[in-house]
Length: 121
Length: 121
Image (tube, rainbow over all chains, first blue to last red; front, side, top):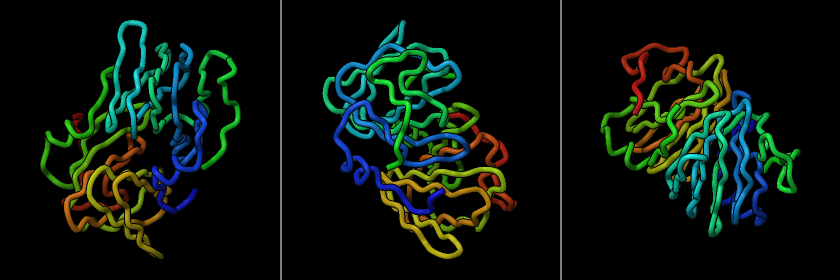
């Protein structure tokens, strides 16, 4: 467990690829992840994990089966386990995720976007 | 579990008192808390809980026994369980906390600052 502070902008400057979350912190079995998103993700759900999306920069649309939520910087949403969702970013978005360390990015789906191994950043 | 987004600035506008965390979200047994800080807190530790401090606005000093960390907006630190710490805010600071729902704000200490009951916001 590090005892150094983490500056989000410094971390986001270290990578450019999309849909590839990095682990910026770990606590109580939970991960703090940072990711850049652009384009459409796939519909998926997490069987066992609630997932928090916090937008740092840009605008993130999260499609749910019954509505769509638009997140601006400084806004977050918690997607409870079992709820299908699909993130969409028309332009680049920087997000912070807070979720159990066990969380797979594509949840119950496997695709070219699935990231089985996560690096620390 | 709510399925509405949370706007941090809207939530911070709802209260003015210091050292009184509100619960803005819950996931996986963890709380997302919002608090305004000003002045010096007390030295304490959390026996069982790691605690994340994320600064939204203002500047937060966190004293540890062997060093002091200064957090600016967009920066966070994770204080592992068992590590004594003391938050100090010379001017008002807005922070977001991620920590287990069981976390008591003053940890192993009791004082006039102890908040046994937390409201949702």
